[in-house]
Image (cartoon, rainbow, N blue to C red; front, side, top):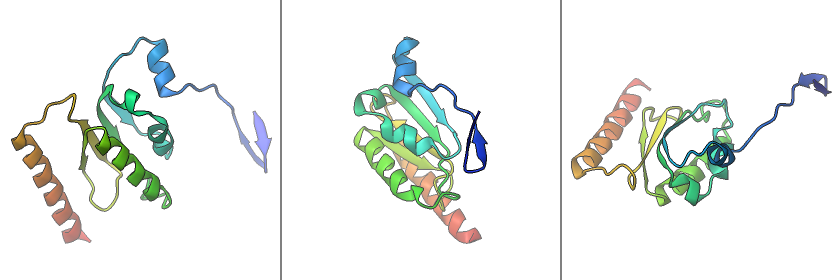
Length: 132
C-alpha cells in the first residue's frame, strides 16, 4: 500500500489490451465491453488502427455525465472509430453514457439496418428532448 497526500492506494500490475490479446492468442474480439469508471477514454485512445480492426463491436459507458473534460477525448475516439469503419449508436442522447460502436467492415450492415440505426438515434434524440 502506498500513501500519498493523506490518501492510500494499492498498486496492481496491469497489461494493455493488445498485449493481453497477444499473450492469450486472441485474434479477434467479437464484443468488447468497457465500463471501467472513467478510464474508457485512456484505453480506446491507446489502441491503434490495426488492433481496432480486430474488434467487431464495442459497447462503452463513457463518464462524460460525471467527468466534464472527457467530451473532447470522446469526440476524438468517435472520430478514430468512424475512420476505422465503425458506426455509432447512442442509447442516451444527452451524453455518451451508453454507446455502441459496430465495425461495419466486420459486421456487414445492410442499407435497411443502417436506416434503422438512424431512426433509433432520431427517436432517442426526440425522447431526450421531450423529457428535458
